[in-house]
Length: 434
Length: 112
Figure 1 (cartoon, each protein chain N blue to C red):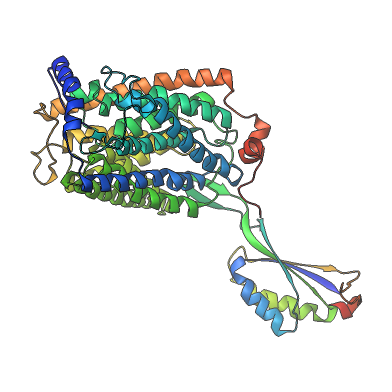
Figure 2 (cartoon, each protein chain N blue to C red):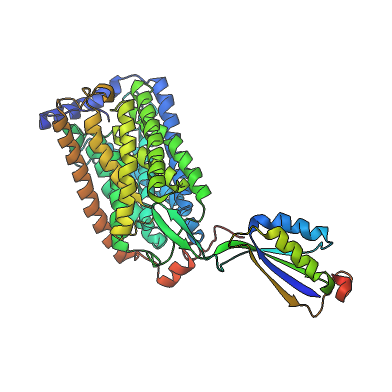
């Protein structure tokens, strides 16, 4: 994110290390860029609060609505605190290619005049904070309606520090994937693959809801879900457009392709469902939109409008089938389909960034490969390494963390409590008093 | 005195209410209920998973009428609530032993 450098591996890293602090201090603050990233930061926070909270909230049963809303708010608070204390430092302190370090703990060294590029570092750190909020919040969809609140709190905190922050360092903080030339503009690997894979592993480890496959666990309020989806769409302009870290052509193009992919994903899912099941559904259409958004995310700063059409279309088709395969064929109760939508979207988006970034595809051309990479096969190889490394690291560490949490707090509520609903059991409140 | 309990399709409520009003029946109680009869349930589709939903939303309308007005009232309901399609609902008629208006203490026919 700060600089895309490549081989020779060690040399470029040394140059980065020596030059980065110097360069950042030499730049002058750009007011236009600062204004746009401040706006983007607010947009990305709105994606979680209340966008994702409503999107997920409507999908659970009415007895578990606070389970979702409460966790989104609690995670927003916890992730913010941890980001200040140590998360940002692990992700963006210079450190080594795998781990940032502890030099920026408590935002040490960030004053009102410190710059990151040509925007205030305080703003950069907060913009990144909103990403650190939404990523663990995305995971809760995987284990919704059966997991103890205490387990969610502990897991989210550990996960943020040990999975999210290090991978952010690899991809955006000058780490090994960034040095290799991985194209991940706004978080296909960092946000969507990590959240999707963590949700999948958690769904497997925690096990399905009691009623899974036996009785219908239908959404209790799709009005809420569609409202939240609309906020996600708008908020994503800040997520992807803001990831340019400037108010420039890259940001504008990122916003445009984000919109195109969302629209195409939504329409593709709608027609696919219509053809396959006879009815176009509201839930399907907004799910296709989220798939389109998640998939364009890693590619958003690198591809062109026609490439975005293809990416949105492929997102609609593949994520649709992924939902059916994972839930109905594999019988994994990833309750709100986090992996098939975000995980699979992040994977195909990261790979397709390696294709549609090419400047030699005619109308489908993008803005070119990473510095020092000259062919599509070379870029695709780097993208594949990024996907696989993120997938495996996330899966392994998530699994270990869940085992630790199981020993400390336990993971699930008992079947009786699950029947009653987690709002009363965990919070002694009801979402609806009617 | 008779109690008419009619299960009807929700969107037919206004027509049934007007039909009963027209024949001088001005009091009724309506409850949102769920159930099924010959219509059985219907399917719902969420992200490619089809669920069979057994219980369909209906309205339960209760009206207490004098025995003389019973036939006219049931006919009015049947006429207003009928679509000719399966799931139009049912009417149950039961005897009422006593009716008391709480405000005045009137009983029987006077209290209807």
